[in-house]
Amino acid sequence: MIRLERVTKVFGLITAVDAVDMEVPSGSVCVLLGPSGCGKTTTMKMINRLIAPTSGRILVGGVDTADIDEVTLRRSIGYVIQQIGLFPNKTVEENICVVPDLLGWDRRKSRGRAAELLEMVNLEPSIYLQRYPKELSGGQQQRVGVVRALAADPPVLLMDEPFGAIDPINREVIQDEFMKLQAELKKTIVFVSHDIDEAVKMASMIAIFREGRLIQYDTPDNILAKPIDAFVADFVGSDRTLKRLRLLRVAEAMMTDPPRVRAEDTLDAAVRLMEEHAHTSIVMVGPRGRARGVVRMDATRGKHGTVAEHQEPLPGVVNVKDDLRTAVSTMFTHGVTWLACVDDDGFYKGYITQRNVTQALGAIYRNR
Ligand SMILES: Nc1ncnc2c1ncn2[C@@H]1O[C@H](COP(=O)(O)OP(=O)(O)OP(=O)(O)O)[C@@H](O)[C@H]1O
Ligand SMILES: [Mg+2]
Image (cartoon, rainbow, N blue to C red; front, side, top):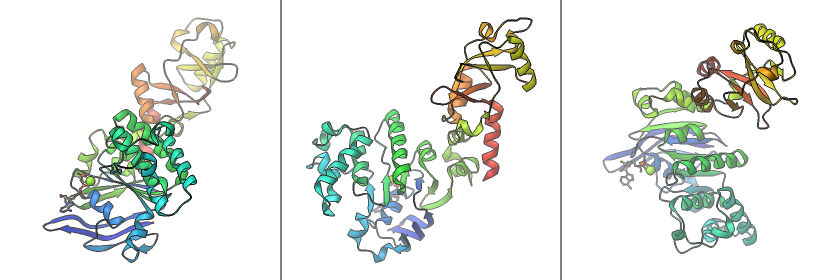
């Protein structure tokens, strides 16, 4: 969808962007990552021709952008600039509707859409639509900036550190909201960040820049598992294996169809089941299959009776949708080597062990 061919930008003595070749497939999120001054913003601005390349070609949807009228090009590309850049003398609503109005869209429709989008980024339309930018916090302004870029429903979005001014907790919330939005809208997005965690979370592909050069262009997992050189390894951090844990869900690593017992079962039956599976503990489920407790082999030795009499509370539970980082963290919090995995309704779906986590990391490494 977006294709850069040997794209270069020279400012006087500085080569800000140096012969970059890159392809961003339709519907994917490409994160440009690298230290300050490495050429991320310049690369992005060349895509909508706010900056003209010194040499090389950029194609959007197969068309050379040099052949498209600049205004037409920019209206088809949503842009969230690094400094937010809301018009100070326009209300939030007017800011959001700038491009739809320019395009002559039905005013009622675009105002309705503005309210909808604002709600999606957790800003209450009835409060914020009529405010001016100076009456908003930096993070709120950034969210309006994101909404403004989406308002005309462009197929391509350029976002330059769009969440940079938002505090870490709200940033995670906005990132999650944005990814939900993206799963629906399937825009082709070029996203600048210098936060590796943000990149790993959002990106289909990560492009690592250094001094204007594209050093590695790869999936988040390959960037973390197989950094191409010491610079990339250093940039992604010595905890890169822990970061990879975020890329996998519990459901992908857990053991499914686990053995289970019920309150009314005998302890003998529970022990037999544990022996059969070579397990040292077994989960007790409720009448409909919700995880309710655990029976441990070493606490039952020489005892008899029912499961109900000998069960203990589950030390830790993890949701099948959680990532492996959450699973490992929960294991360490409770000092256990396995966890029961449940769905949103608490139904027992499987269990995950430390070994499963290690194997999952090995598997994604081998698969790519
Ligand atoms: N208009 C300009 N004139 C001269 N040099 C420029 C211009 N714009 C950018 N540069 C230089 O080009 C290089 C790349 O700048 P760019 O803004 O693309 O970096 P960046 O990766 O976006 O950095 P940051 O993370 O700080 O935003 C820098 O050395 C910068 O000083
Ligand atoms: Mg920049």
